[in-house]
Image 1 (cartoon, rainbow, N blue to C red):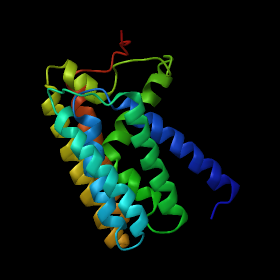
Image 2: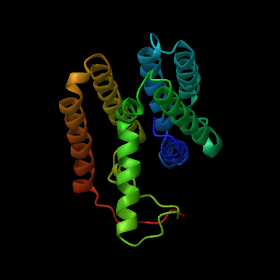
Image 3: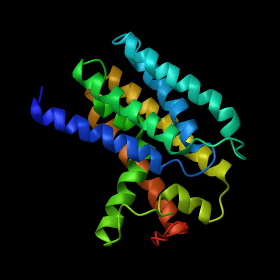
Image 4: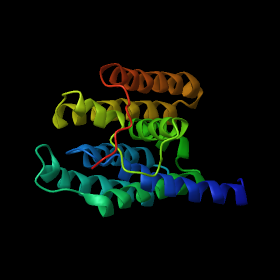
Length: 211
Protein backbone atom coordinates (compact mmCIF):
# COMPACT_ATOMS: atom_id res chain seq x y z
CA UNK A 1 0.00 0.00 0.00
CA UNK A 2 2.97 2.34 0.53
CA UNK A 3 4.53 1.73 -2.86
CA UNK A 4 8.27 2.40 -3.09
CA UNK A 5 8.39 3.50 0.56
CA UNK A 6 6.84 0.20 1.60
CA UNK A 7 9.38 -1.72 -0.48
CA UNK A 8 12.24 0.13 1.20
CA UNK A 9 10.75 -0.37 4.67
CA UNK A 10 10.19 -4.05 3.96
CA UNK A 11 13.77 -4.54 2.76
CA UNK A 12 15.12 -2.67 5.77
CA UNK A 13 12.91 -4.74 8.07
CA UNK A 14 14.21 -8.02 6.65
CA UNK A 15 17.82 -6.88 7.05
CA UNK A 16 17.14 -5.77 10.62
CA UNK A 17 15.37 -9.03 11.48
CA UNK A 18 18.31 -11.02 10.11
CA UNK A 19 20.84 -9.11 12.19
CA UNK A 20 18.57 -8.85 15.23
CA UNK A 21 18.27 -12.61 15.51
CA UNK A 22 22.01 -12.96 15.13
CA UNK A 23 22.52 -10.46 17.97
CA UNK A 24 20.19 -12.44 20.24
CA UNK A 25 21.85 -15.82 19.68
CA UNK A 26 24.23 -15.53 22.60
CA UNK A 27 23.29 -18.11 25.24
CA UNK A 28 22.22 -21.75 25.18
CA UNK A 29 18.69 -22.41 23.95
CA UNK A 30 17.60 -18.80 23.53
CA UNK A 31 17.40 -18.36 19.74
CA UNK A 32 16.12 -21.88 19.07
CA UNK A 33 13.54 -21.63 21.85
CA UNK A 34 12.31 -18.27 20.60
CA UNK A 35 11.85 -19.50 17.03
CA UNK A 36 10.08 -22.64 18.27
CA UNK A 37 7.52 -20.64 20.25
CA UNK A 38 7.16 -17.68 17.87
CA UNK A 39 7.05 -19.89 14.78
CA UNK A 40 4.41 -22.12 16.34
CA UNK A 41 2.19 -19.24 17.41
CA UNK A 42 2.68 -17.52 14.05
CA UNK A 43 1.63 -20.71 12.26
CA UNK A 44 -1.58 -20.87 14.30
CA UNK A 45 -2.40 -17.22 13.56
CA UNK A 46 -1.76 -17.69 9.82
CA UNK A 47 -3.57 -21.00 9.44
CA UNK A 48 -6.93 -19.58 8.37
CA UNK A 49 -5.71 -16.56 6.39
CA UNK A 50 -2.56 -17.84 4.65
CA UNK A 51 -2.02 -21.63 4.91
CA UNK A 52 1.13 -21.51 2.77
CA UNK A 53 2.79 -18.98 5.09
CA UNK A 54 1.51 -20.97 8.08
CA UNK A 55 3.35 -24.03 6.82
CA UNK A 56 6.59 -22.04 6.50
CA UNK A 57 6.24 -20.86 10.10
CA UNK A 58 5.31 -24.37 11.27
CA UNK A 59 8.30 -26.00 9.55
CA UNK A 60 10.59 -23.35 11.05
CA UNK A 61 9.14 -24.04 14.51
CA UNK A 62 9.48 -27.81 14.09
CA UNK A 63 13.08 -27.58 12.87
CA UNK A 64 13.95 -25.21 15.70
CA UNK A 65 12.30 -27.50 18.22
CA UNK A 66 14.31 -30.45 16.96
CA UNK A 67 17.51 -28.45 17.20
CA UNK A 68 16.52 -27.18 20.67
CA UNK A 69 16.82 -30.73 22.02
CA UNK A 70 20.57 -30.46 21.43
CA UNK A 71 20.89 -26.74 22.11
CA UNK A 72 19.09 -26.68 25.47
CA UNK A 73 21.43 -25.70 28.34
CA UNK A 74 23.99 -27.09 28.67
CA UNK A 75 24.15 -27.05 24.86
CA UNK A 76 25.82 -29.78 22.84
CA UNK A 77 25.23 -28.12 19.46
CA UNK A 78 25.35 -24.43 18.58
CA UNK A 79 23.45 -22.54 15.91
CA UNK A 80 26.08 -20.07 14.72
CA UNK A 81 25.59 -17.01 12.54
CA UNK A 82 24.32 -18.99 9.55
CA UNK A 83 21.48 -20.56 11.54
CA UNK A 84 20.45 -17.47 13.52
CA UNK A 85 20.68 -15.20 10.49
CA UNK A 86 18.53 -17.56 8.44
CA UNK A 87 15.85 -17.72 11.14
CA UNK A 88 15.76 -13.93 11.42
CA UNK A 89 15.53 -13.65 7.63
CA UNK A 90 12.56 -16.06 7.54
CA UNK A 91 10.72 -14.14 10.26
CA UNK A 92 11.35 -10.89 8.39
CA UNK A 93 10.05 -12.35 5.13
CA UNK A 94 6.98 -13.79 6.89
CA UNK A 95 6.21 -10.35 8.35
CA UNK A 96 6.56 -8.60 4.99
CA UNK A 97 4.60 -11.30 3.13
CA UNK A 98 1.83 -11.27 5.73
CA UNK A 99 1.55 -7.50 5.44
CA UNK A 100 1.66 -7.57 1.64
CA UNK A 101 -1.13 -10.13 1.31
CA UNK A 102 -3.17 -8.81 4.27
CA UNK A 103 -2.98 -12.18 6.03
CA UNK A 104 -1.12 -11.14 9.19
CA UNK A 105 0.03 -7.55 9.81
CA UNK A 106 3.74 -7.06 10.39
CA UNK A 107 2.80 -5.39 13.68
CA UNK A 108 1.67 -8.77 15.03
CA UNK A 109 5.10 -10.24 14.30
CA UNK A 110 6.67 -7.31 16.17
CA UNK A 111 4.42 -8.07 19.13
CA UNK A 112 5.08 -11.81 18.90
CA UNK A 113 8.85 -11.34 18.72
CA UNK A 114 8.67 -8.52 21.25
CA UNK A 115 11.30 -9.82 23.73
CA UNK A 116 13.93 -10.10 20.98
CA UNK A 117 12.90 -6.88 19.24
CA UNK A 118 12.91 -4.89 22.47
CA UNK A 119 16.24 -6.14 23.78
CA UNK A 120 18.12 -5.82 20.49
CA UNK A 121 16.63 -2.46 19.49
CA UNK A 122 16.89 -0.72 22.87
CA UNK A 123 20.45 -1.94 23.35
CA UNK A 124 21.47 -0.76 19.89
CA UNK A 125 19.94 2.69 20.40
CA UNK A 126 21.54 3.06 23.83
CA UNK A 127 24.97 2.11 22.49
CA UNK A 128 24.60 4.63 19.66
CA UNK A 129 23.52 7.33 22.13
CA UNK A 130 26.60 6.58 24.25
CA UNK A 131 28.86 7.08 21.27
CA UNK A 132 29.96 3.44 21.15
CA UNK A 133 30.74 1.62 17.95
CA UNK A 134 27.30 0.12 17.45
CA UNK A 135 28.59 -2.45 14.93
CA UNK A 136 31.32 -3.80 17.24
CA UNK A 137 30.93 -7.05 19.16
CA UNK A 138 29.68 -6.55 22.71
CA UNK A 139 27.91 -8.19 25.63
CA UNK A 140 25.48 -5.42 26.53
CA UNK A 141 22.14 -7.03 25.69
CA UNK A 142 19.79 -7.46 28.63
CA UNK A 143 19.86 -11.26 28.38
CA UNK A 144 23.67 -11.22 28.41
CA UNK A 145 23.77 -8.91 31.42
CA UNK A 146 21.32 -11.15 33.24
CA UNK A 147 23.81 -14.01 32.81
CA UNK A 148 26.65 -11.75 33.92
CA UNK A 149 24.63 -10.95 37.05
CA UNK A 150 24.74 -14.64 38.00
CA UNK A 151 21.62 -16.13 36.38
CA UNK A 152 22.13 -19.39 34.54
CA UNK A 153 21.58 -19.82 30.80
CA UNK A 154 18.60 -22.04 31.62
CA UNK A 155 16.98 -19.43 33.89
CA UNK A 156 17.42 -16.56 31.44
CA UNK A 157 16.24 -18.64 28.49
CA UNK A 158 13.14 -19.78 30.38
CA UNK A 159 12.37 -16.18 31.38
CA UNK A 160 12.66 -15.00 27.77
CA UNK A 161 10.50 -17.86 26.53
CA UNK A 162 7.87 -17.02 29.15
CA UNK A 163 7.85 -13.44 27.86
CA UNK A 164 7.48 -14.80 24.32
CA UNK A 165 4.50 -16.94 25.33
CA UNK A 166 2.83 -13.86 26.84
CA UNK A 167 3.69 -11.88 23.70
CA UNK A 168 2.14 -14.65 21.61
CA UNK A 169 -1.06 -14.41 23.65
CA UNK A 170 -1.05 -10.65 23.11
CA UNK A 171 -0.64 -11.11 19.33
CA UNK A 172 -3.51 -13.63 19.30
CA UNK A 173 -5.78 -11.23 21.20
CA UNK A 174 -4.99 -8.40 18.79
CA UNK A 175 -5.56 -10.67 15.78
CA UNK A 176 -8.98 -11.77 17.04
CA UNK A 177 -10.07 -8.50 18.66
CA UNK A 178 -8.48 -5.60 16.74
CA UNK A 179 -10.44 -3.15 18.87
CA UNK A 180 -8.14 -4.12 21.77
CA UNK A 181 -4.99 -3.22 19.81
CA UNK A 182 -4.01 -0.14 21.82
CA UNK A 183 -4.48 -1.47 25.37
CA UNK A 184 -2.87 -4.84 24.58
CA UNK A 185 0.02 -3.15 22.77
CA UNK A 186 0.59 -0.76 25.68
CA UNK A 187 0.45 -3.64 28.17
CA UNK A 188 3.01 -5.60 26.11
CA UNK A 189 5.33 -2.60 25.96
CA UNK A 190 4.98 -2.07 29.71
CA UNK A 191 5.81 -5.73 30.40
CA UNK A 192 8.92 -5.72 28.22
CA UNK A 193 10.05 -2.36 29.59
CA UNK A 194 9.62 -3.68 33.12
CA UNK A 195 11.72 -6.75 32.32
CA UNK A 196 14.44 -4.59 30.76
CA UNK A 197 14.51 -2.23 33.75
CA UNK A 198 14.70 -5.21 36.12
CA UNK A 199 17.87 -6.38 34.38
CA UNK A 200 19.24 -2.84 34.37
CA UNK A 201 18.82 -2.67 38.14
CA UNK A 202 20.85 -5.83 38.80
CA UNK A 203 23.47 -5.25 36.11
CA UNK A 204 23.55 -1.81 34.41
CA UNK A 205 24.75 -1.63 30.85
CA UNK A 206 28.50 -1.04 30.87
CA UNK A 207 29.23 -1.47 27.18
CA UNK A 208 31.80 -4.20 27.66
CA UNK A 209 33.33 -5.47 24.42
CA UNK A 210 33.29 -9.19 23.63
CA UNK A 211 36.67 -10.92 23.45
